[in-house]
Length: 306
Image (cartoon, rainbow, N blue to C red):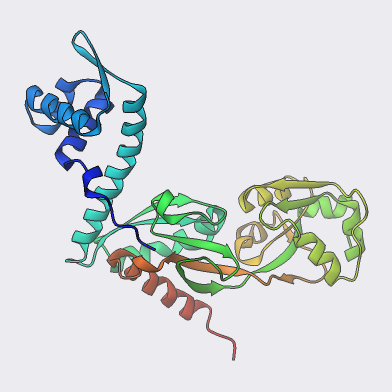
């Protein structure tokens, strides 16, 4: 449900901009210089805002202005709001030309290993689109984070959002050749002698692998947990243990001989990789361009099974 704004609580934008600049600089003069206004004009805007709010935002100390507690709270909240307002304005203008900026959250290892190597093709087709990347490992609030879309791994569920399944995930057991030889790992049961390397968002992956092999993990088997698959892979290369990693992310280490795929079954997870974005943003030009390109790549590289 959308609650309409109370207009009496919405001060003039000029006053808000003047106050934010003065708060950021700690100076009315510096704010005036940034905004190409006189110092008196900025001072009047700030005083008008204080009168409307009925709260002192600055304490005047000789020639300086110092934020009050209320001013500090308002400045921090306002800075984020003005930033979003500017971004929304730029994105709205972009409807005219079909370009604009896309704020995209990616999974770090998936982004560096799979997505980024394919992006030159996107930018060759869409030179007027800018992508700003952030990393997120778990679901988040789009509005609070100020992001337009995300590459997400998990279930096909995100309230208020559109999801496009990109691909599933197959996990394979890998280890450094030296560790495999040292522990004499020649069969599935031999994994019990190794430390298990775990990615934090896949805490049950090894349990699923043991179940697929009709084995029970030994009590107290050592485990090392890492936030990102890149760290899991590096730990495996260093010989710290045996890893269960997505097949599509380990190609480099396998080709260099730093890791080897062990025996036994791979694990196909029930979850998958998705492009997800708020339903209200589906027509955003930069997002639409990226979505159509990405789904085209998936269709070419991973055609549906017949």
